[in-house]
Length: 397
Ligand code: MG
Image 1: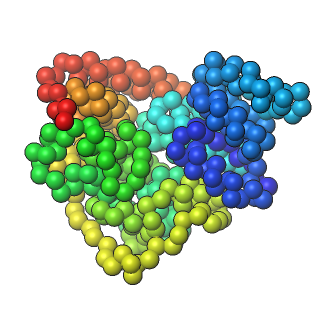
Image 2 (image 1 turned 120 degrees about the horizontal axis):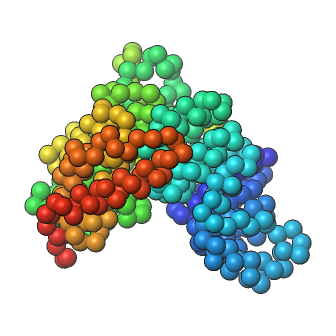
Image 3 (image 1 turned 180 degrees about the horizontal axis):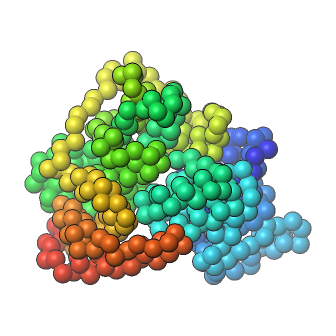
């Protein structure tokens, strides 16, 4: 039996992972689960999987969990240990298990990723920010502790799997696919005046608000390009981004002999989440095989950089190095939040990011343990810069 810790168990990746474990009870033992504040979900999950420890970032949620009738019964017997507070996920992550699924989103997930690696735990990584904000440091830490980071993002999982077809020295370049989001073919004016509701409607993947807006601007692909560069040790010039509207070709690796090895499948996170947990083995994920005959064709097109300037900005940030990627991420986060509050237009996110990179680079460097604080500082900086710029509010239709 392999032991598993899930950090961020009530989110979409966490729930997908639980469904995977439910289908493979004979192979995995869920030992620790970290929640933000969803104590009711925690009750169900801890009973179903008979977990050893449960943690809550929110201490009131931990109290509600322990006060509930269902838990009182368990407490006299073998109920789970309960940990609460902002450091609780860090504590969960430190317990030695076979794999830690790091699925707490945002910079809040960073300390627990660091903690898991320091304990020598293999990490199935679903938290983008940790690699974007501190990729080189995090990978060096994993190397020092002799452990691996298995990507759970669908594109990186595809590249990780495709890389198994050859040696590192035989790789020429990586190919990252993007769906192009809801404005791929829309008139630019429509994109300019898009409401948050319109921008949130992703054609293929169902995701949280931040991810959906990032897909509409391709900032998401910029973040993924940065992640891929760090994870697979390539420069941005070695990572091509191409539009595949159906999101069926999840990404590919181009080898020196002209071969391109890709991973294809339905756009369904169950595959990448399952593989992240089961690696180096493959196990049924519940996803049906793709029928190429039914699909008929796979469409590809180049990225329109005038429409999606965020991707080019991510490349500049990565080339600049240092805190460039951290600042790109912070500025984009501020831009997305402002757009969702209808304070700026969707197309204002890129100029805001550009401006913040220009003004702020070099201010947010520091050791790994300070990366979360540096991220918060960068967000405050970008918010102040956003207020300085006079951007038009988004239309509210
Ligand atoms: Mg992705």
